[in-house]
Amino acid sequence: MHGRAVALGAGTVLNALSTGVGSAFAIDAETTAVVELDESGHTEGTVAEDDAADTRLIERCVELAIETYGDEREETLSGGTVRTESDVPMAAGLKSSSAAANATVLATAGALGADPERLEACRLGVEAARDVGVTVTGAFDDASASMLGGVTVTDNETDDLLARDEVEWEVLVWTPAERAYTADADVDRCANVTPMADLVADLALDGRYAEAMTVNGLAFSAALGFSTDPAVEAMPHVAGVSLSGTGPSVVAVGDADGLDLVEKRWDQRDGQTWRTTTRTDGARLE
Image 1 (spheres, rainbow, N blue to C red):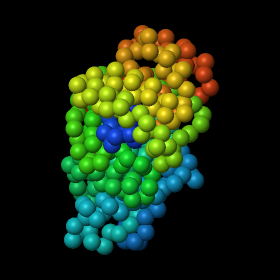
Image 2 (tube, rainbow, N blue to C red; image 1 turned 90 degrees about the vertical axis):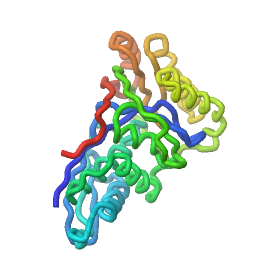
Image 3 (cartoon, helix red, strand yellow; image 1 turned 120 degrees about the vertical axis):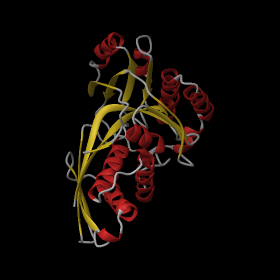
Image 4 (cartoon, rainbow, N blue to C red; image 1 turned 30 degrees about the horizontal axis):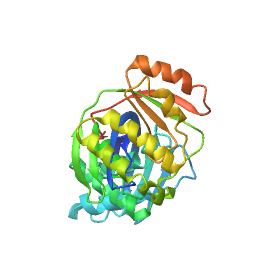
């Protein structure tokens, strides 16, 4: 039984490490998962971009989705294969894990003949991420933006969706060569910027997403040990700019003319600079 699904990468408005409240917005960068189910009792995952990548998350997503969406007719289906392929750089702060989890849950559900409610499927991916230890907060903010599209604000401690809105921005991403893993983030240092995180949450819930992400970026860059120089270079020209996730990518949003100016500056930095847009349509079965 075969299923295929696509989910989106995302950028950060508010990092949830300080307070458990987070916010993210979907971008036009896709992760595709292809699932084949069988009766082997074993799940094997592969990542197209890296043969040595940790596949525990996508394998756990398949297991949970079989448990949730299988029925008596498919009771013998107990394993299979899952392969992901992605435009989203891994360990770059652009929600590659959330996108892979969402796509895998949906693809497995599709293989079982189900088309699940999107938030329910999203929460399964978050559960899988917690089970295998690839997230500190549960990343429901990242996962909800990837799954639903648009910008979301969430309580990651209760997995509640506090707000969802649609934004239309041009997006500029700078991704340096180094990688940063969420599970390795210094949570204690992030707790020091809790007052700023509370302010960012207030701004986001007031619909002031671009301002919120700029405050977030300055606070969490300092807390996580990243330079604020890329953000400071961008601030005169864009609506908002932030360290995305726990880094190392920096994401700026605004109009094309402003981003053109920033791109010229960021192109002088080591790493990759690339353009995309926001997305409002979310994940889908194919």
